[in-house]
Amino acid sequence: MKKKQIVLLLIVTINFCFAQNKRGTIIYKKEIIEFLSEKEGFEINKEKRPKYYKTVLFIDQNTKRTIKDIEFSLKFNNVESIFRADVFLELETNRFYKVALGPEGSKIYYTNQISEQNIEQIDAYGELFLISYPQNEWVLYNETKKIGEYTCYKATTIKKTKGRKGIIDTPVEVWYTPDINIPLGPLGYNGLPGLIVELSMLNYKYYVSKIDLNSKVEINIKKPTQGKVLSKEEFEEIGVKAMDNFKKSFN
Image 1 (tube, rainbow, N blue to C red):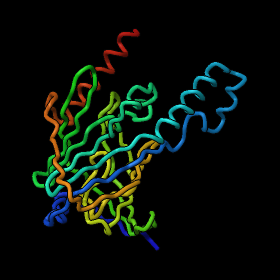
Image 2 (cartoon, helix red, strand yellow):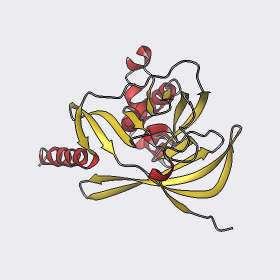
Image 3 (cartoon, rainbow, N blue to C red):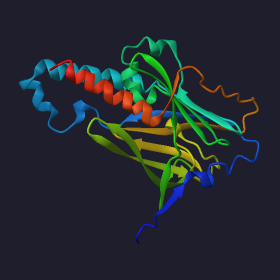
Image 4 (cartoon, helix red, strand yellow):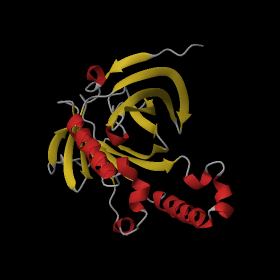
């Protein structure tokens, strides 16, 4: 059967489920799909490049152990949500912590469902930034799969990033469940008719490990305010210039 595809503009759906008094916390875990040491042909380095082989193996093994202890919290109320890595002192002193987080996992993501405002707070190029991002545009599919007790539906979008050689398209695949009537997810992705239970992008995956809905405790979301305010395009221009300067320094 041919899969039915529907392009969904988030502006249509982003507010549909927040009329009720909903608040809570969703805990996500992160998984790296394939480590460098697991790639086909890597074993050949054991004899040809033994120092490189041992270094990569050491980094991968420690990153695997570290990533198991990392949790990400998506906190939400009727109006706002925020997604970030939970802070544990013992992990922050682990030198593999930032490797396990990766560039996406180290940001703070804020969303306001009423004003349709999406902000990422990021520490980059020696400075703190507040980046405004547009709403996602999704393609929905009839394809389903069971994740835990929930029936989930597939959706995809494309993350577009400006690089030195033009626009880079990064496919993003998610599985959301209408059983949990909350249009939110990890890494600031939102606007689907249900909670994003699983998100895959590049070489990693985020998945729900714990759900606490309609919490009796008030959920107060603190909007990030520290940092230089830029649009997505302005921030990407800084990145392109930084890469150009870095390349010139080796010429």
